Length: 262
Image (cartoon, rainbow, N blue to C red; front, side, top):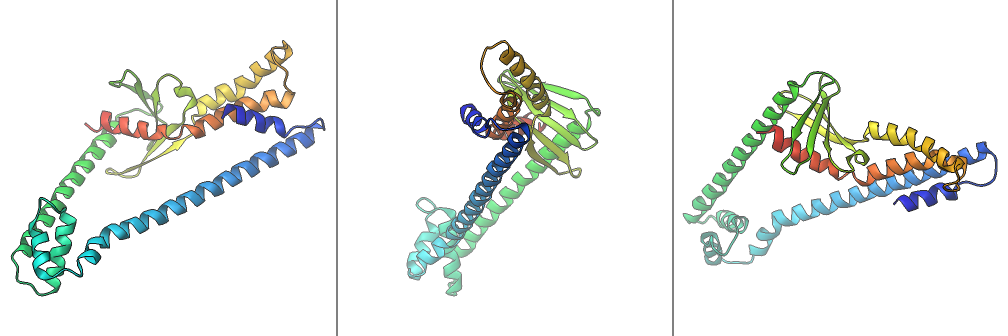
């Protein structure tokens, strides 16, 4: 990735004036990210369409499959909890009901489905309770304070209160300076939303300090690059690395829930 970014940066420069170089740089980078955005949106749309189709198939497959079976076969499927999943048994019971069957198995299967629904609601209640615990502990953090929590893997969970209802969450570990942070917004006493965001401190350190170091090393003849390559290569590299490591957002969210949701 670093090599590709370097080639991208190098290929857009010529021996022409600085105005031309800056124009070509802006145009190339904007075009690059524009096409990347289009590709990402296209992937999301294809994924959404695929999941919609899969969900429809999962919902209707047993009903369609069992339509041709007679009532005795449906009765056998509905009773058999060892060989058939609950969805298949539910479909068999539903078809029996549509055929005005008086089988007691219908009530039995419907009761099992209802019990599972209640079990899921209990799990949902537990999730809501955990969310309330997280919000309560977040609100105990003072404005601009960074609270630190030791994790079982030896790393450190850091939560900084940026505003009244906004927090920055990150894991302090080896190379964590090159990864994005997670922003958490409290939307109510029972809900919050999260999203990944650039780690600004990292961008300032490497984006501003990096070009200075590059220019110094260039003047000392450690390597030969143009002025604009020395200026632009460090921040572009850091931004690229933070984009590549966006999946660390899920680790931040996981450890937040485990640490503060108790």
